[in-house]
Amino acid sequence: MGQATLTINSRNYGSWSLRGWLLCKMVELDFTEQMMSSDDPSIRAELLLLSPSCLVPCLTHAGIGIWDTLAIAEYLNEIKPNAGLMPADRAARARCRSICGEMHSGFSNLRSALPMNLKARHPGFRVWAGAQADVNRIIVIWRECLTTYGGPYLFGARPCMADAMYAPVCTRFLTYDVKLDADCSTYCASIMAMPHMQEWLAAAKAEPDEVMELDVEF
Image 1 (cartoon, rainbow, N blue to C red):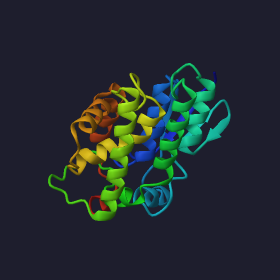
Image 2: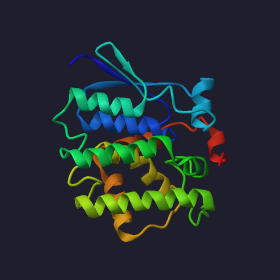
Image 3: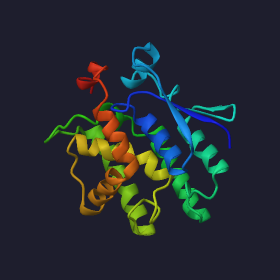
Image 4: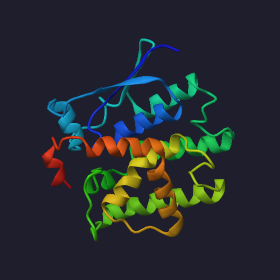
């Protein structure tokens, strides 16, 4: 299959790094991790939401470089077609791609108002109206998927590409004490309990606090 390397940035703050890492774990790709330092100005800008996510995650596999998260997902689905990264049903795959694309290109208010910070907790955090609209849309997506496909994950009994894309949102909802209905709360709990998520969280908690601006950048 060839040697693979996944380049990521901060585990505590890097939501796109988490998505790419989960995708690789979901297909059981044998890969090594390469951490980019937050001292790099381009990575620092990305973590501070001042530039688009374009440098990380980056998967290098068999001499091929893939640096966009959706591209990584599609590539992994090609090389590991039996791993279940996308639903087997064509209609379900279409919906999966659609909601992943929506996460990839949208929800800018949510990103800026509720940046990922796995170490932080903000009980009673007040979500402003623009970000609340994004929260409401995500809740609609989750409810529709959980109702249609039966849970506990968005497309049924096992986590897939869509769950990797929305996993950082679950962490944001926990960090900022976002109120959810029972079904969405249960979904978030299922995501947070995944062994791969627990592995990432443990590493994030051990990570030095190098990007202090993120504690005040909202």
